[in-house]
Image (tube, rainbow, N blue to C red):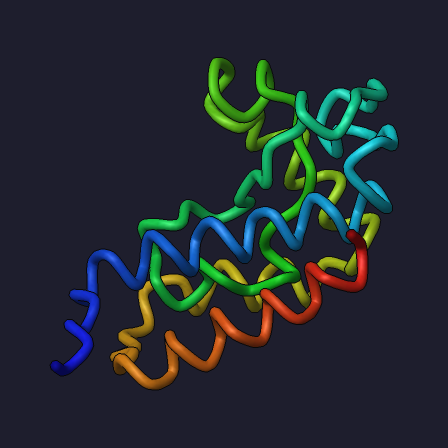
Length: 133
């Protein structure tokens, strides 16, 4: 019996889960710790933080880019449109204007991701997650 391959949309969803979990673990330091929202600056427990995208994850080129994704509280990320102005200012301080401008200027670039790339990234982030658990 052969193992059924996951569809590309299911692979994307799986990669989203492990990448966002890794981002939160990395920035907070573990599941039982507290981290800071990059946009409002308040501290929250791990479960109250999202992996918020500076440039929307609809732009595939930056969807899994660690420079583009950081911890945000659920209010800022989900209910306040990502607080993009505050996120921009934080990114500018954290990475510099040149990096921010580069992210923005390349958001429309087309990238074709194949099944193997996604499978490799899923495994890569699973291994990194184990370091925090």
